[in-house]
Structure formats: C-alpha cells, structure tokens
Image (cartoon, rainbow, N blue to C red; front, side, top):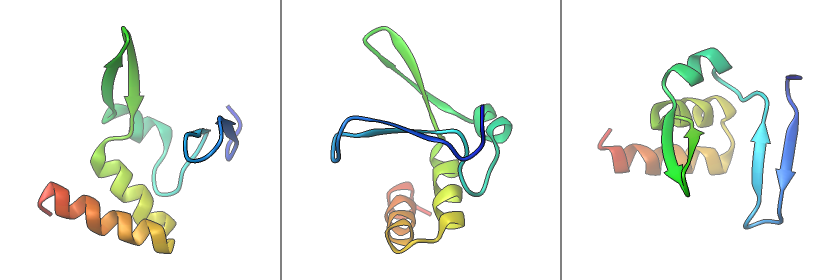
Length: 77
C-alpha cells in the first residue's frame, strides 16, 4: 500500500477513514497488538488503546491532546 493515503467512505459525522499510515507507529507494530471486534460475523481490526494514545500523542493536535487525556482517564492511567 502507498504511504499516507486516506480513503473515506460516507459523510461526517458518520464517515469512516481508512489510513495507510499514521504518526507514531508502523503497521507491523500496530498489527501485533490490534484489538478485534466481531460485527455481523466479520472480525474488524482496530488499533489497541495503547497504540491509539501513542498515535494521538505523536500527532499532537489540540483535539488529540484532549482525546489522550480522556482516554488515559478512562483507562486509569
């Protein structure tokens, strides 16, 4: 896959973004620790909570900083 490509389906706030790269970690690292959820018989992979925090810290935007604080509070960190 090409790096830094975003493929979007839908319209905000119900939009899904497919990213080929993210700040702060690489695919192999993220894939090892992914979380999976079953939806209608399909296993859907997601970033682990720890990697989501790592990504948001690397991105460093204002909304990302707020997200990190809220995620850490929910996880008791």
